[in-house]
View 1 (cartoon, rainbow, N blue to C red):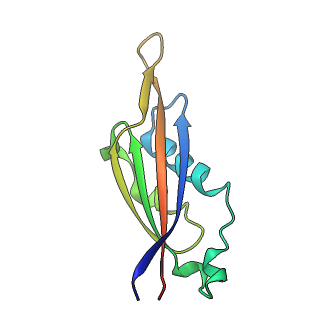
View 2 (cartoon, rainbow, N blue to C red):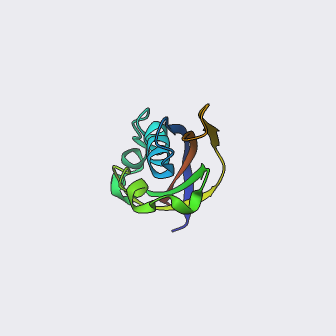
Length: 113
């Protein structure tokens, strides 16, 4: 059966004082997922763990994101994470730290006839 794109969820996350891209990415994915209760898998007679989730994170310093920590956010199914340059980095007045903002897009796919 072919994979069909069922859902697109989007979110934003920040690390206000730590400039940690993983923390911002995890918060962005949580923002995308935690405002929804997807019943589409069950409505199609599938288990929620049949969902395949394709996560894209836009964040400063994408190479520093721990993808396993981001994937651990997924409550159901399996997933992949791709990190790209994006988001925002806002330095503090002293230039000693910065705030990071990450964006997340989670595309949910199901294998349906």
